[in-house]
Image (cartoon, rainbow, N blue to C red; front, top):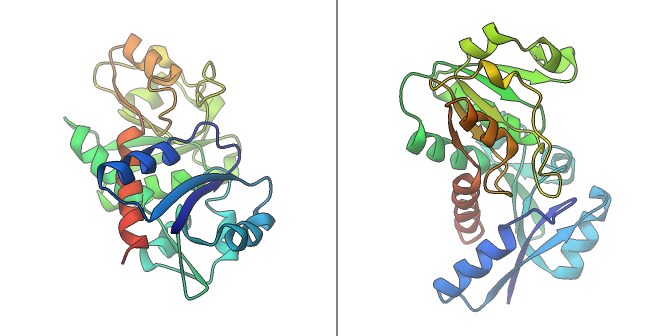
Amino acid sequence: MRHYGVIGFPLEHSFSPDYFKRKFELQNISDADYAAFPLRSINDLKKIIEEKKLQGFNVTIPYKEKIISNLDSLENETKEIGAVNCVKIENGKLVGYNTDALGFEISLNELLTGSHNNALVLGRGGASRAIKFVLKKKGLSFKSVTREKSSGDFLWSELNKKIISEHTLIINCTPLGMMPNEKSFPPIPYESLSENHFLFDLVYNPAETQFMKKGIEYGAKVCNGLRMLQIQADKSWEIWNR
C-alpha cells in the first residue's frame, strides 16, 4: 500500500482526503490511501513521515513556506515561487513542488473574461506567492494588500473606491471566510465593486463565502477555489507517480 496525505493545521476544512478517496474509487486504485495529518508544529513532520510511511503529501495552511527548510530540494519553478504545497519522497529525500500555481492558472484561464489588467492580491501567506507568480507570468499588474506596510503595497485600511475601481481582479488569499469561520470576510469596500469586477476566492469550503456573496451583491463575477484544488491535487498525484 502506498501512503499519501495532507499536512497543516487545522484541517477540518480540507476536501483533499475526500477528493483522493473518490479519485481512487473512480480510477480503481486499490493500492493507495490518503489521509489528513494535522500538525500543531512543523517539527512533528519527520515523525509523521516515518510512522505513516508516506511517499508524498500535500501542504496547506500554515506551512507552505515554513516547510521549505525541512526539504532536501525544490523543483526549479518552486524556487522562484517560494512556497510548497506538494512534497514527493524518493529514496529518503524530500523534494518540494508547487502545484497551486498550475491550479490557479488553469482555473483563472477557464473563467476570466473581459479585460482585467490590474489585480489586488489579498493576504501575504504561502498561497499568495503562487498567485503572484501566475499573475506575473500572465503579464498582469498586481498590488498586494496586507496588515503591515513592509510586506505589501496597501494596508487594508488604505483601500478606497479609487483603488478598488482600478483593480478589477481581486483574489482572496487569506483564510477569512473559511470553515469554521464562515461569517468572516476580507475588509474591503465592497460597495465600490461593479459588474466589471471578478472576485476569485481561494477558499472552497464553504462553496459560497461571504467574500463571494458580497461581490454578487454588487454585480461582480465570483469563483471559489474548488477547481483550483482539483487541478493541483491531480498534478500532485502525477508528480508522486513519476
